[in-house]
Image (cartoon, rainbow, N blue to C red; front, side, top):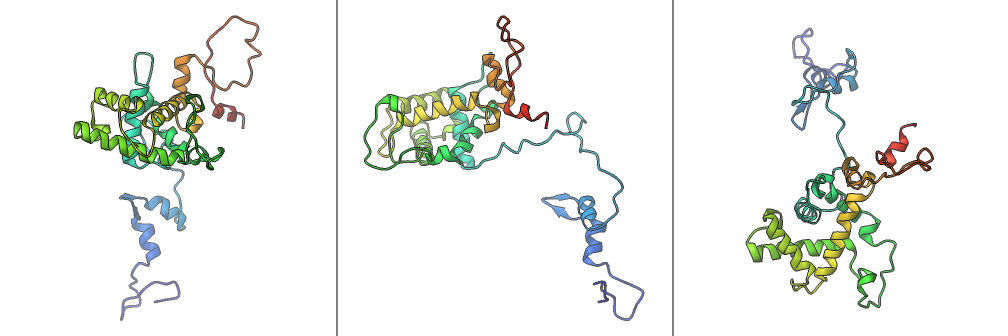
Length: 260
């Protein structure tokens, strides 16, 4: 081995085997099945021939847009996510007025909320004694919302198998409606949580995901607002405040970053 870290074959000073560095630069390095020799070569000191153009999208031949990294799971398992996505779509289905909960990304909204303060009941009093509250008071108990979802989703899956020998996400829409109705009416007998209490939380979470700012994972492309002609987060209404009612395009919190 010489001072540059390269190996030489015995008996021949003029023949050199490529070092690991040269091997990576010249051949590329596979990560996840994709060869990225050009990018890695630049990091290792290989001269660049200029900036690379974005990879074209296979369907249109146009440069692919940036990926939506907000569409990722933070709390739910993929199996739980499938149940939530199917259930919320039945609560807020796609119709002639516009997209449903699935297309709006409501299940991602719920997942992200469960991973944060809302899932931990961080801003609520959670110490005993516990008393059964009135319906107008909402949930009253010791379980955190993330714990409630864990239990309820498993019970929904168990009840689906007992009734139809399939998981909830594999049922027809009508069968899923019957499962949800059984929870809403407390037909399902559960000892740990209130079935109707969970249904109310799920329904409320669904509507919040449809109509909250897209920042939180739901209401994709502000389509939930568009269906209600809701203007979203406008900076001001001074230009139209003295005029007759008119529909204006919705604006999200992200739109306020345009000037920065």
